[in-house]
Image 1: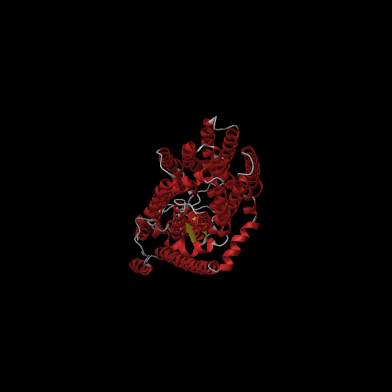
Image 2: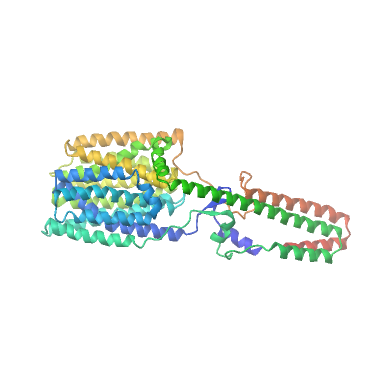
Length: 544
């Protein structure tokens, strides 16, 4: 009885389907450490890469735009088949390989050779797809529905530090009088340190645990592989029956034995259900490992209703990257570029942490509404900015950073929420749309004015946000429903619970009430001496 009470206090899981529970508290600190460590590695690696990217359109002009266009278009193409590789090599390995290609891209700028540079840019598309598809899958595997917003905010908060620290390092090197080769050599060394950090990432904890193993996984007080020995209990009960000759006592004990038999039957049914679910999962995994099925899964998401309503917002996220890291920076003097982008990075860091937590508390829709106003306000400031009014670039990019942090964390969180069992394919589609729109925006970005770029930015921002809000109102809620968390040992489960464990608990509760009523009727007919014996024996049975 005491062990059961302890396990009730320590077990906090939620039923996902008959036979399985979603992990809630098990591995919570472990998963935070995983996401935090990954964020540190990305911060160091992208401090080097984003500083390089921000300077491409300023230092290399037309070649910089062409390089980034090639990079993002190849990134889009690679996203068509990268989910298969991520499935086979694990997200950690995918991020390490992708990070190595990032370092090669930065190193190619040390001594610029046009065709080598463009070739590495094309290879960089593969590396970007590997690292970001692996990243999205890793974050989802480390989280649950209730904390994915927080974990996304932690990662992007650490990740976006790169725009602040990396650009300050680049600005210091440029203003010290160092040439471009020295600048990119230092950035290459920095990127290598970030790659080394990714080698130490650990495997995320399991998301689902079977019903029979739930207590053993979540409880600190129940030893592993502990089982109830029904034979010992039955022997002790039989001894009590032999010692007492009263028929009422025998009836009561027999009722207890019947309850034990009912429990055994329910446990057998649960075991068979678990085996069936495990076999189904094996079939699904075997189907997903084939190349054709994984490609089919990725392209199938394009025509799913949930994904269609997100496509415009994904396109906006790609166009916005061109505005932040290409179009605006090409209009700023070289000595100011890194400082302006540091302000952008600082605002993005604060926004990612803040809005990641706010989305878990108030919902994604509220955060997306605020993100829309941030983006609009930032674009209006940049519209009137120039090198004569350099302070407007600082202010406008700061507001853009707040909007980018809010938008990006919610897109990640929303994809993880809507496509819980299709993470690799969902993030591949997202990266495909985002990188393709970014690449195309780099193609036309230097051919039109800053104001014309911002008009395109406005149009996709408005239509993208409106499509998501319509999706939330008419088709599918974008926020997680509030729900209570019940333990599998809790005898006060609601009537709506339909799992086998819930049915067993309700049956057990009813049998206890019936046994109490029967014992009351029998006690009235028996003498005081018999009643005393009944009470003593029933107490002994309860203790057992």
